[in-house]
Amino acid sequence: MAENQNINQKLEQLTSENTEFKREVSLFSGVNVLAGIMVGSGIFYLGSYVLIRSGMSMGLALIVWVIAGLISLLSGLCYAELGTMMPKSGGTYIYLREAYGERVAFMNGFAGFFISSSGSIAGLAVAFPNALNAFFPMTEWQQKALGVSLIVLLTLFNIRGVKLGAIIQDIFTVAKIVPIAVIIVFGLFMGQQTPDLSVIPASNPSIPSLIGMVAFAVVSSLWAYTGWTNINVISEEIKNPKKNIPLAIIISIVAVMSLYVVFNFAIFRTVPVDVMQSMFAEGDYFVGTKAATILFGNFGKTLVGVGMAVSIFGALNGCVMVFPRSYYAMAKDGLFLPSFRKLHPTYKTPVSALIASMIVSSALVCTRNLNQITSLVVFSGFIFNSLTFYAVVVLRKKYPDLNRPYKVWAYPFTVILIILVNIGLMANTFIEDPVTSIIGLVVPAAAFVLYPVVKKANQKMMKAE
Image (cartoon, rainbow, N blue to C red):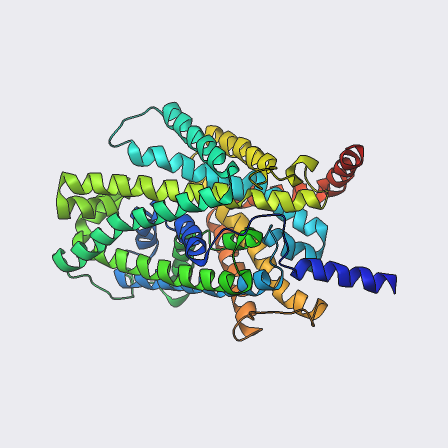
């Protein structure tokens, strides 16, 4: 009897919209948080990697962008069901805890703190000075110093409240669209090239080779979509979360997918194939910059430089804002330092978690380069995203009567499909980049071993308070 009562109380807490936080993030701001994180500097250069991995087939490259967008959308639908069912700060951590227990959830949070979440912040902070380097030449350590300074500045802004962070996100998401839209419009209507949209590369690969090629290209494009999970992390600060969480996820992913496809087609309309091949041979992958230079001369180069800086700044702010909420949720369960579960008395933000995130991200900026950071982030995401997708199945069986304001389309086919896709991409990544993949496995494995030690130590600290 008492056990059933405890379970009912727990379920009531999970599904309740009551919160210590302030609900100040609207649907518009929610879409901007997701789109602002997804659309970073990668829009100007990731298309090069996708094109190269697609065998220089423009038609296949565009299909890859659509495939990655659909994978992200199907994935987002799983998060929409989980987020509306349990509108609590912490997102993935909460869903993994309820589906598999604290140990698996701790592994995800631990990997996020040291690799994926902090790595995303660090990667963007490294990319920002890279975007400015063409205009203001800097040494490697000057670039790192600027990256760390940005992390510190945005952390201070977000300590002041989620509303201020959301306002910054709104401004920079709208601002970053301007140079992208200019390139799209002028590229489509002024571009002199007629793209060859054949989906078969000139090398005429076999069917198995073509599938492997597409999978490897999709991994590159998925990095450009990374960030769609983050609205769930701030569920307790979203207005009307049971309606706005799924809407924000669907609207942002569809809009970003459309943007990427049209932007890359505009590039193909503007930059000749032989010019792109020469650029790639010289290690220059910024075809977005090249397109703007062709269209507008030196002004175009400046336009893209400003656009990249604005894009990165907006994406960085979104990451700084949302990731520490997961550490807050873990601390409430005694799996992180007790200070992480305390909110600022005035601003109602997890100030200690924000500062800790700032420190780890800054350390990664100082010790890693951009390629190392992004590879780790993507591989770690494959592991825990797959577990989160399957959590939809587990929780439907575990809590069949729980209210689900939104349900995944075509369940369970959609869930199984997206899990298989993620496993395939993870296996392909392991084959193509085994060293990074092994590192991505070692950190969660270490968390598995450390879980009882960390929990015991933190529970002692909580009792001593």
